[in-house]
Image 1: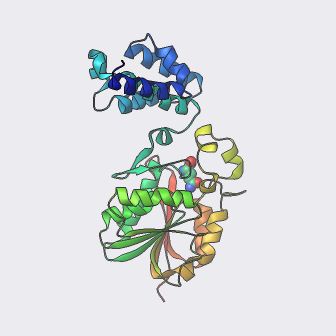
Image 2: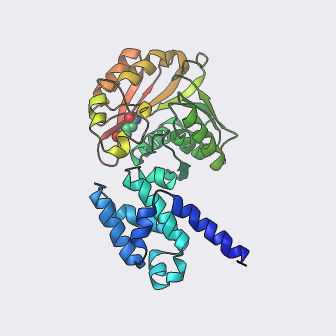
Image 3: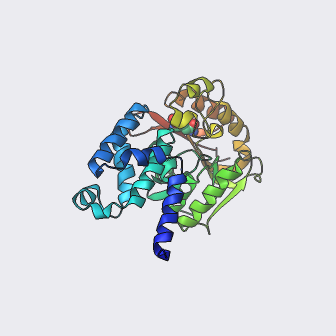
Length: 312
Ligand code: GLN
């Protein structure tokens, strides 16, 4: 009679064997770990993945954790068939050009580690410029913060994590993104101060209800978006990226409502595309905002525009 434990292991193997990544596991059957790594890098490079070696390193670190790659090379017992099967499953997804953050399920942003999915824009390091600018400009006192098009909740949660007296509301058109944002609030221990509602920009909010308004709206022109890498073009939500013919559709729509939403003396911070500082500043000026400034990201590109509503 077969041992019940052996049967469990056989069943687990059968589940892995039924998954789509079987060709990878078959190819890696007789290989040692350095050979698997080389094969993985070659396959990633063939698939057109720019950072083939770096992505392979991250995936190996992920599946081997808590052991390091070097530990596992020295001691093959640290590299079980489950770990190689998991590597095959994750690599299979990456070969379809899924972004690394979606393959791994989370992405570091500011001091947080945030869940992401195909319904949320992957938080970018550039967006930390917006977080930093708001923290520098807006002071510490209690404030009501609103994030329009919150996606994973990245900006809202990073700001709340630094300002214990602020309360935040994230708004998004996508219920699936809001679900991710709510999980992130729980994961960061900020669910008592971070709330998320479905809506189109600030349309559902009461007059003068906001002290600080932040947004990283879709700002890529439809034409540019069509030419981007599949990681962005195919796997990230168009809703979060496509800013229309000139990339400015979302800014126009939000600007039409800013003076109604923000209290006098309130702050606005927009993330912008590297070539949009003038266009967005002009929109804000026409809207009636003052103290309009542009902030550069670490690469030296214009990345954030901040402005204030006049104090009457
Ligand atoms: N910075 C993002 C990118 O280049 C775009 C973000 C946005 O449209 N808000 O992919």
